[in-house]
Length: 239
Ligand SMILES: CC(=O)[C@@H](O)[C@H](O)COP(=O)(O)O
Ligand SMILES: NCC(=O)COP(=O)(O)O
Image (cartoon, rainbow, N blue to C red; front, top):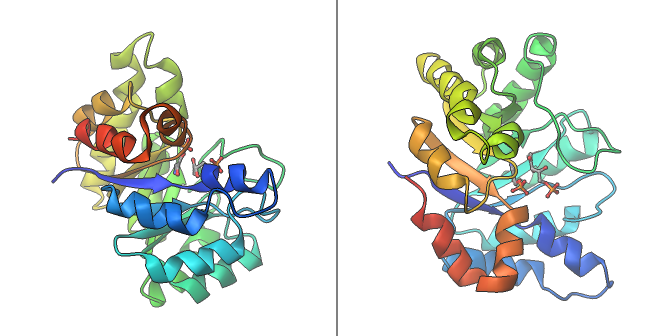
């Protein structure tokens, strides 16, 4: 099965917020991304709402015709309440702190086992699929399976950073982590800093990859190619 493309629209909200007003319109962008071929919409609301806002998340849910993925830190009560209210297709749990510029590490699934197990059960009881953001480390992915999560999302920043120098070396940990996920019956997602150059090799090399979520590079490319063309270009390099 071809890997699904979930478009992260945080950056569209970032541009809107820079001027106040409603240009670009985030809701319209979510509708258009789906019409242009996205298999899902991802949002990552943070407590300071510096890009996507909690109110955006509530407004987007009814227009979703594909899959809705909400990312965030479940140590923030307001995030947990939002997810339980909106009931997306999937929640991706990310351990980022309030002052981080962007996500920069995955969960320690060994140390945080109890916390993750409890919070994952809460979401799953509401029928929400759960994915947890992890580094591509075999022991971390193996321990993720004991939390009851449906999927893991491999944090791909390290892959993206090393891809141009040595693609085979850059992919090795991810291919190994994917094998562990498969053996443990965990679904596999991936994201962060994926782009048109590194995406094809990643999806070709990492087995059983269900979904990639891409925002920063895709929205940047859309400035040059247009949103519809760009989504189609990304979809063409997925395996
Ligand atoms: C979990 C992850 O890697 C992405 O959600 C990333 O945090 C992108 O979000 P921003 O574009 O808001 O930094
Ligand atoms: N989960 C990763 C994501 O949603 C987008 O990350 P990026 O492409 O903005 O780095």
